[in-house]
Image 1 (cartoon, rainbow, N blue to C red):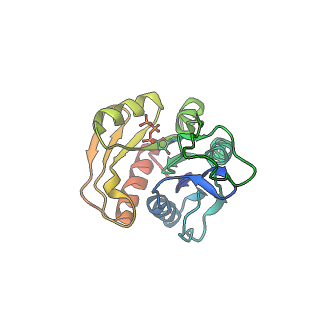
Image 2: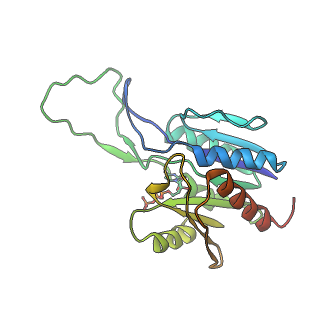
Amino acid sequence: MRILVTAGPTREFIDPVRYLSNRSTGTLGYALAARAVVRGHAVTLITGPVTLTPPQGAAVVRIVSAADLAREALAALPDADAVVMTAAVADFTPADTHAHKLKKASAALTLTLKPTTDVLAEIGRRKRADQIVMGFCLETENGPAEARRKLASKNCDFIVLNTPANFGDVRESVTVFARGGDQTPLPPLDKPELAARLIGLIEAARGKE
Ligand code: CTP
């Protein structure tokens, strides 16, 4: 299978030295890419800025912003059999990026933000019936309801429901929601173990390879 994995945070620049970002470390995305390589799949890893070393054998595309990620992921989509969207894409980006470092001229500063492309939703709109799409959903409240809503609204085959407690190098317990209504709670697993389970679900959904 040809598997496209996106991982890590994006950075949305305010000026040449400041940006908006999030706590994503990319650990799960890199573990998924590594597991997919081990299973013999052809892996493309589109990664935001993280300190991890990509797995040997994966084709790596480095991106910075949500706009970069949208461009690269949508360009790679037609050649993918499966897409795993672990990237923590910024939902908003500054309406203007200042060419020069902002000076602290006044007591308060108001940033105006504009929405970014929802890459997963766009992938859901464009995907062929033979392509498997796995999205992730990080919630601090109403997790299951939000996961089911995103599964339908973003036309995904799987949504993996996560919590902020799972950031970084910890054991994760997540619940996987599948198209058709199946709901699979997974026990606390380290990221390589979780990655193996998730790649296994994608392989089973493709029913071959
Ligand atoms: N995602 C994306 N593009 C964005 C934002 C998110 O592709 N601009 C993807 C993430 O990679 C993840 C999924 O959407 O797989 C869910 O992200 P999440 O932040 O939980 O959900 P949102 O779509 O941002 O929804 P909301 O803000 O309503 O919770």
